[in-house]
Length: 121
Image 1: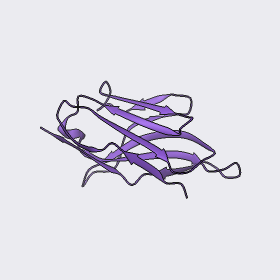
Image 2: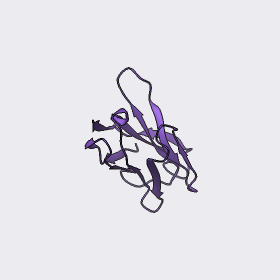
Image 3: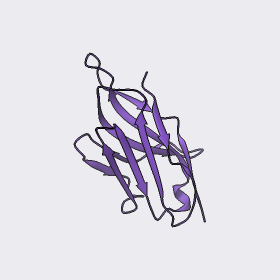
Protein backbone atom coordinates (compact mmCIF):
# COMPACT_ATOMS: atom_id res chain seq x y z
CA UNK A 1 0.00 0.00 0.00
CA UNK A 2 3.05 2.25 0.05
CA UNK A 3 3.14 5.01 -2.55
CA UNK A 4 6.35 6.81 -3.42
CA UNK A 5 5.79 10.47 -4.18
CA UNK A 6 8.29 12.07 -6.56
CA UNK A 7 8.98 15.70 -7.32
CA UNK A 8 11.51 17.88 -9.10
CA UNK A 9 11.34 16.72 -12.69
CA UNK A 10 11.19 19.19 -15.51
CA UNK A 11 12.98 20.85 -18.39
CA UNK A 12 16.53 22.11 -18.03
CA UNK A 13 19.23 23.22 -20.44
CA UNK A 14 22.41 21.24 -20.90
CA UNK A 15 24.86 22.08 -18.15
CA UNK A 16 22.08 22.94 -15.75
CA UNK A 17 21.03 21.36 -12.50
CA UNK A 18 17.98 19.60 -11.19
CA UNK A 19 16.95 18.16 -7.84
CA UNK A 20 14.69 15.15 -7.56
CA UNK A 21 13.05 14.19 -4.28
CA UNK A 22 11.10 11.14 -3.23
CA UNK A 23 9.36 10.08 -0.06
CA UNK A 24 6.64 7.60 0.81
CA UNK A 25 3.14 8.75 1.51
CA UNK A 26 2.07 7.95 5.01
CA UNK A 27 4.22 6.18 7.53
CA UNK A 28 6.46 3.15 7.11
CA UNK A 29 8.36 1.01 9.56
CA UNK A 30 11.75 1.10 7.84
CA UNK A 31 13.39 1.69 4.47
CA UNK A 32 16.61 -0.05 3.56
CA UNK A 33 17.77 0.94 0.07
CA UNK A 34 16.39 4.01 -1.69
CA UNK A 35 17.36 5.20 -5.13
CA UNK A 36 16.59 6.36 -8.62
CA UNK A 37 16.35 4.57 -11.94
CA UNK A 38 15.69 6.03 -15.35
CA UNK A 39 14.18 4.77 -18.58
CA UNK A 40 13.79 5.97 -22.15
CA UNK A 41 11.59 4.45 -24.88
CA UNK A 42 13.10 1.29 -26.30
CA UNK A 43 15.63 0.92 -23.50
CA UNK A 44 15.55 -1.03 -20.28
CA UNK A 45 15.35 0.73 -16.98
CA UNK A 46 18.80 1.46 -15.57
CA UNK A 47 20.13 2.41 -12.17
CA UNK A 48 21.19 6.01 -11.69
CA UNK A 49 22.11 5.91 -8.01
CA UNK A 50 21.03 4.37 -4.77
CA UNK A 51 21.82 4.69 -1.10
CA UNK A 52 21.47 2.38 1.87
CA UNK A 53 20.11 3.24 5.27
CA UNK A 54 23.71 3.53 6.47
CA UNK A 55 24.57 5.99 3.73
CA UNK A 56 26.50 3.72 1.39
CA UNK A 57 26.06 4.96 -2.17
CA UNK A 58 26.24 3.48 -5.63
CA UNK A 59 26.37 5.46 -8.88
CA UNK A 60 26.12 4.57 -12.53
CA UNK A 61 29.36 5.27 -14.37
CA UNK A 62 27.52 7.64 -16.68
CA UNK A 63 26.61 10.01 -13.85
CA UNK A 64 29.58 9.78 -11.50
CA UNK A 65 30.87 13.21 -10.63
CA UNK A 66 27.65 14.90 -11.73
CA UNK A 67 25.13 13.36 -9.37
CA UNK A 68 24.86 13.17 -5.61
CA UNK A 69 22.33 11.01 -3.81
CA UNK A 70 21.42 11.59 -0.19
CA UNK A 71 18.69 10.67 2.23
CA UNK A 72 17.02 11.90 5.36
CA UNK A 73 16.06 8.86 7.38
CA UNK A 74 13.85 10.86 9.72
CA UNK A 75 11.78 12.02 6.74
CA UNK A 76 12.22 8.79 4.76
CA UNK A 77 13.25 11.02 1.87
CA UNK A 78 15.82 10.45 -0.85
CA UNK A 79 17.24 13.31 -2.90
CA UNK A 80 19.04 13.12 -6.22
CA UNK A 81 20.99 16.30 -6.93
CA UNK A 82 22.02 16.43 -10.56
CA UNK A 83 24.35 18.94 -12.17
CA UNK A 84 26.18 19.37 -15.47
CA UNK A 85 23.23 17.69 -17.10
CA UNK A 86 23.53 16.31 -20.60
CA UNK A 87 20.88 15.62 -23.25
CA UNK A 88 21.49 11.91 -22.77
CA UNK A 89 20.24 12.31 -19.20
CA UNK A 90 16.77 12.85 -20.64
CA UNK A 91 14.51 10.08 -19.35
CA UNK A 92 11.68 9.23 -17.05
CA UNK A 93 13.18 8.93 -13.61
CA UNK A 94 11.69 6.43 -11.18
CA UNK A 95 12.14 6.44 -7.45
CA UNK A 96 12.39 3.11 -5.71
CA UNK A 97 12.58 2.05 -2.11
CA UNK A 98 13.03 -1.22 -0.28
CA UNK A 99 10.31 -0.76 2.30
CA UNK A 100 9.29 -2.59 5.44
CA UNK A 101 5.75 -1.41 5.98
CA UNK A 102 5.43 -2.72 9.52
CA UNK A 103 7.16 -4.94 12.04
CA UNK A 104 5.38 -8.08 10.83
CA UNK A 105 6.24 -7.85 7.14
CA UNK A 106 9.46 -8.27 5.14
CA UNK A 107 11.16 -5.65 3.03
CA UNK A 108 9.60 -5.24 -0.42
CA UNK A 109 10.60 -3.01 -3.30
CA UNK A 110 8.26 -0.23 -4.40
CA UNK A 111 8.37 2.17 -7.34
CA UNK A 112 7.22 5.70 -7.92
CA UNK A 113 5.11 6.63 -10.92
CA UNK A 114 8.04 8.31 -12.67
CA UNK A 115 8.92 11.94 -13.32
CA UNK A 116 10.09 13.32 -16.65
CA UNK A 117 13.51 14.93 -16.90
CA UNK A 118 14.28 16.63 -20.20
CA UNK A 119 17.68 18.16 -20.92
CA UNK A 120 17.82 20.38 -23.97
CA UNK A 121 20.97 20.97 -25.98
